[in-house]
Image: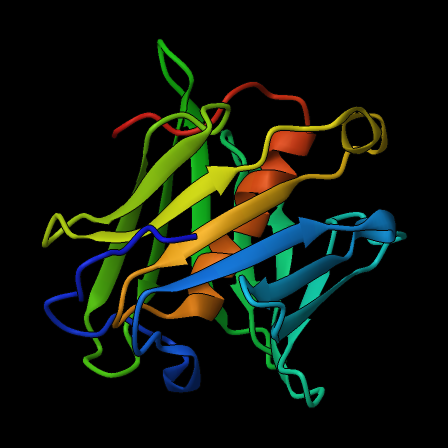
Length: 200
């Protein structure tokens, strides 16, 4: 994809090794058995995401290509609104994605602590998850951190509940964090609770 995003005023990251050095377009393809392929638009693998079908909280394990564990994405129970978190192996919460219903569509916000600065970061979705595209925006600077473009479903994908997303990441943004946010939004969408993400 030829869509370009301007560099962020300063990097926003948990994982320095996944900070985009230039505009990067990732293809996030949902596969059978709750797995995802994460590749660049040229087909280069970036991350591995494997689901655990028997997990009550829909656990997805995200690793580097060499197998190093980065985090697990799980649904937290006992919340009024759908809440997904990314935890490291020690159980430390790295990222939280919350969604709630609004008059039109619904809302989503991701929060985490930037490992470089120690400052809290809040990202929100601008657009609707069922639209063909939506922006992920840094609440403080107003900068577009990423854009999600949904591939229109073909009949086979619709029948199997699989989706393909193109995630265009701005230079300076953490690709792993944004992939986690997209997967959490996809999981919420799969629960059949309606459209996603209008401006908060």
